[in-house]
Image (cartoon, rainbow, N blue to C red; front, side, top):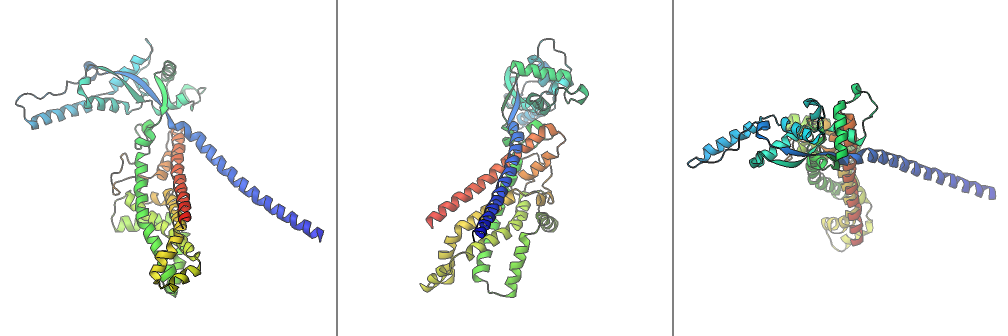
Amino acid sequence: MRAGLRKRHLTEAIFKGFGLGAIVLALGFVALLFADVLSKGIPAFTQSNLHLSVTYDPETIGVDPAPVRTAGQSDADFRAANLKWQRDVALLNWNKVVEASLRAAAPAGFEIDSRQILTIAETNARHQIRDMFVADPTLLGKTIEVDVLASANADNWVKGNIDRNLGDAQQQLSAPARNLIDTFEANGTISSGFAWSIFTNVDSRAAPAAAGLAGAFMGSLYMMLVVILLAVPIGVASAIYLEEFAPKSRLTDLIEVNINNLAAVPSIVFGLLGAAVFINYLHLPLSAPLVGGLVLTLMTLPTIIIATRGALQGVSPALRQAALGMGASKTQMVFHHVLPVTLPSILTATIIGVAQAMGETAPLLLIGMNAFVASVPATPLDQATALPVQIFLWQGNENRNFFEARTSAAIIVLLGFMILLNAIAIFLRTRLEKRA
């Protein structure tokens, strides 16, 4: 008997050891994944900036002063003259101003050609300086202090992401440009600051250092709004009907089986369905958040229906019988007694389903949301991309030294939103359970 008892205790200890080992192994892999993403992504939240003294020299710019309204000049004539001046300003070579500002910050006698020195500043620096002049034409002839983004290659060089021992043929920056960047870093012309551009700018191919997630974030936000407005009420209502009101028949059994099957369908199939129905048949706009939201709604519905039915099935039959025994109708019994009890579980399942939809990529690729979009969508019908798709696009960018960190930073942002959604689900569930 004692031998049998020792054997049972040993078996129990082994089982506990395997269970604990599995948990430790899973947590270890999660920790390893997070450590890798954080180590690569956190440096991307800082960015190198150039502090330049920009002189709007009329001879360098080659532009006339802004038109001044004369006595007797009509509004139409003045607007036409002002528009012509703005067009002329837009067509000027503002790289000359950027180059002059960089040379002014360089040590006296430093030799570097125009093409090489311009690789230090991001290409959108000329647009920034031009827009400041258009907004305030009185800057002509003045010198002001301006912070512009360093180029992606310059930022990589400053952060040490480029091996300094590589030969000139393997470097992305010329030797004079690298030396000048080191000089700028030493004298404070280049400094690092928080990369607000990740959150405020849209994606950019011409200016990689200015690429951001604003467009992708708004696209994801519009899609999640569509999912919440459609999937939640439809899913909860369908589950309530199937569980509480639908007569037991072959038809309802068939519907239940198909809902369970849809929950196991790969997400890419929903993308094919969305492309065929919403784009080809209904002619909705390609790459629109509305289409993405509809596709994700179809994908999320089975999850919400199954979770809601499970919550309803978990309610004690005594509660239903007590409500009916007090004279409540079946509708009153469901909405006044059963549903409030299941609300915490339904809410948790809904938020988790929405968070899962937020991280989907495959169905969005099939409806064209992998297109390059250089603007923030103003409505759900405008072209847009989404956070997971933006991660996919950046991961395949040819400038791997720079966009590998940006990709990890975007993953951190996406994980942050998903963790926030799950935290909200836990908080609301706790509050509702206390009230119940």
